[in-house]
Image 1 (cartoon, rainbow, N blue to C red):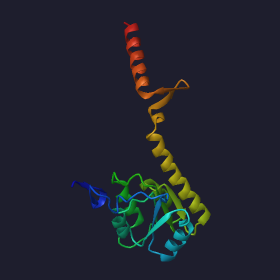
Image 2 (tube, rainbow, N blue to C red; image 1 turned 90 degrees about the horizontal axis):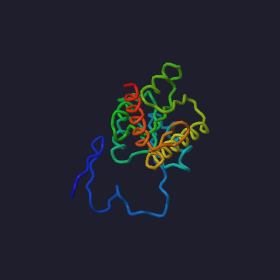
Image 3 (cartoon, one colour; image 1 turned 60 degrees about the horizontal axis):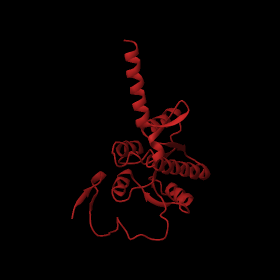
Image 4 (tube, one colour; image 1 turned 180 degrees about the vertical axis):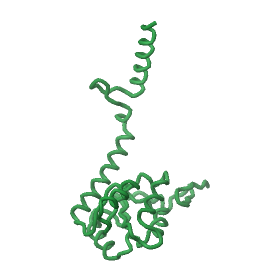
Length: 193
């Protein structure tokens, strides 16, 4: 058996099906949303808002959330900023510097409402910043949009269309464009001589 190393200390043995590689089921998997807040009422409210569509995992500290991410990779993370032991901003920095978790969209929900505090959260790597009290409708729409964007980007980059870019209003394969650009440069260089 081979052992794979995953981010944040994850390890998994290759071989027979296990809990990380379950037998396929007919039910479509619901995206996992990890909610992190030391306020249990906020966690309950967010879970209640999202649980009809998403599988919600709850964490009451950033340290606990880091442990959870080592076993379950969420499609999206919602975190508070002010928490004991590790702040939400430190948590975001930690997951954004890890190549296996930096792609996970993050929403901050916080009582910190100043423009500079919101800008700090976004500059650290949050994809959205909602101030408390927040609307469940806005939260739900933000979660949907971020998860949909992530899925669409993944589909695009795995599609043949991602190998094309527009040149003079026409789609051209990137390799062909590079070749043509180099050819034009060589021709121009030699015409001047």
